[in-house]
Length: 254
Image (cartoon, rainbow, N blue to C red; front, side):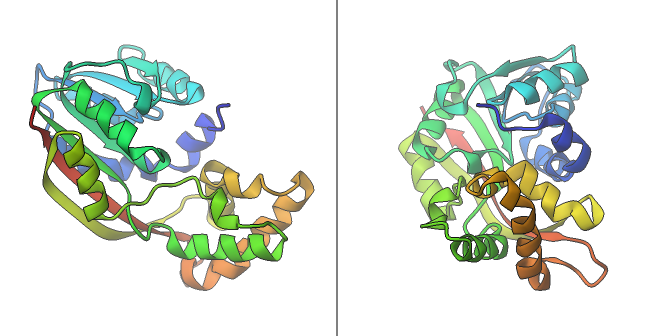
């Protein structure tokens, strides 16, 4: 089932690809290169890569995201595909991924597929949620779910937030040598005013809210806002998510 809302993503969560533009400098796409964009979303960063003269393919597991990307950029190639099921074999000079791989719990399968897709010597550039990402929000979610009678609320967490050492080991097992790694704080202001956190949860946190019956979800979100406000809402009223990002550059050895 496709749980992504491409319209909400594009209208209220543009920070995802705006922050990703900085990652493109690490990629350094060159004319004539073949580049794979893993988790392309609605296609904005795929188009940036193409504008550098590279031949780019964008993939996303969400049919609605791919459909919107094709509407946004009809001259580019987008395919619906999970990263763990990619069919590519030594086709790309580089694989790029922004804000996607924390959604893939089977990191070994994802990295194996990425390694297979790369030509020998090809590069992998990625940024996604790292150890401690959204920690304050998760704490509020777990506390409120437990208070609402949900057993083992941590089991609802859909994300994979590795440390540098943990992810480097995964990469090395797949024949990728880490040439750069950083884990850093990036508090991220949300769009949407008073409803910004509710919109973020609607976009990214459905696995938590769906544990409750529909009539309880609205009041639940209001209680999350109350629990999290002292840590995640600035004095000017802007909601700010406590992101910690893991940025990786690696090269294929074989």
